[in-house]
Image (cartoon, rainbow, N blue to C red; front, side, top):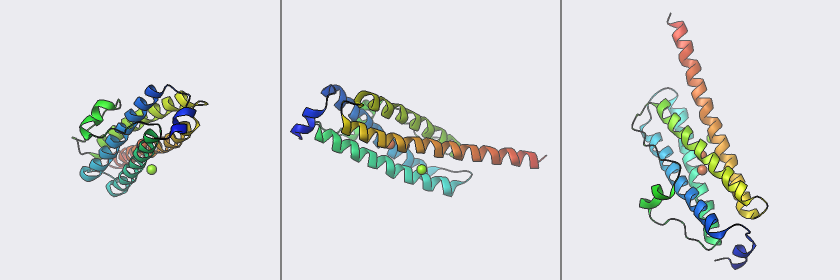
Length: 170
Ligand code: FE
Ligand code: FE
Ligand code: MG
C-alpha cells in the first residue's frame, strides 16, 4: 500500500475506492460484452466490426489494469470474485442474445455511454484533489469517447448502405 499515495489524495477515501471498484467491475463486463459479441455477431461489415470489437475488448481490459493498479496504490482491493462484478457495476451487462450485428452495436453503445458518464463522474470527483486518479480517468474517458464514436460511425455506415440498397431495389 502506498502510504504517501493515500495521504496526498484529498478525496473521501472510501467513496473513491468504491467508485473505482464500480468502474473496475464495469470494465471486466465491458471486456466480456465486446469479446462474446465478437464471437457471435452476424450481419453487414462483420469482419471489420468484429476486429474493432476485439480491439475495444483489449482496451477495456487495459482500463481494468489501470484501475486495479490505482485501487491497490490507494490501499484498496480490486473486486476479486467475478460473481461480484454485476453487484459492483452500475452500467448493466447486456448479453448479445440477438446476434444481429446492429443489435450488438446498440448494446455496446449503451455500455460506452454509461462508461463515459462514469469517467466524467470520477474526473469531477478528483479534479484538483487527486491528480493521479484524475489523470487516469481522463485518459480512460478519452478512450471511451473514441469507442462511442467508432460505434456511431459503424451504425451510420450500415444505415446509409441499407437506405441505398432500398432505393436501388425500387
Ligand atoms: Fe473502458
Ligand atoms: Fe469502451
Ligand atoms: Mg476503436
